[in-house]
Image (tube, rainbow, N blue to C red; front, side):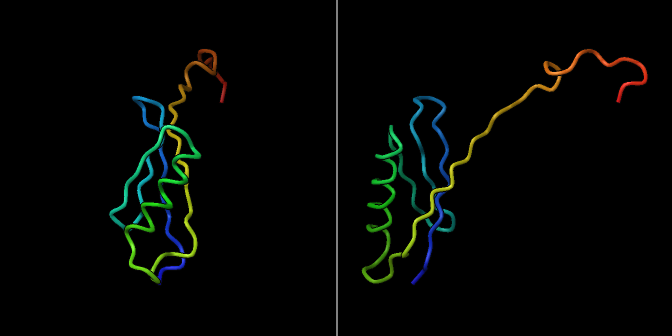
Amino acid sequence: MTSEIIFEVTQDEVDGGFIARALGHSIVTEADKWEGLRANVREAVLCHFDEGKTPAVIRLHRVMDELVSVASWFPSPRENDC
């Protein structure tokens, strides 16, 4: 029995919902709201594993990608700066 299963959770860029992908297992699920995602992940894990082999802990690891422009934060470089 695996003691823990980890899901990488990202936000869907199209509709704003959430997508959860299990690391090391072929389990993927999604939902519009965080509460729904938690329920869907639990159900997907219970369906994926045989009885008695279900992990004791489900970890949801939320990943957020954000691009930050450095140019917009700083004024134009001047001599002797940095």
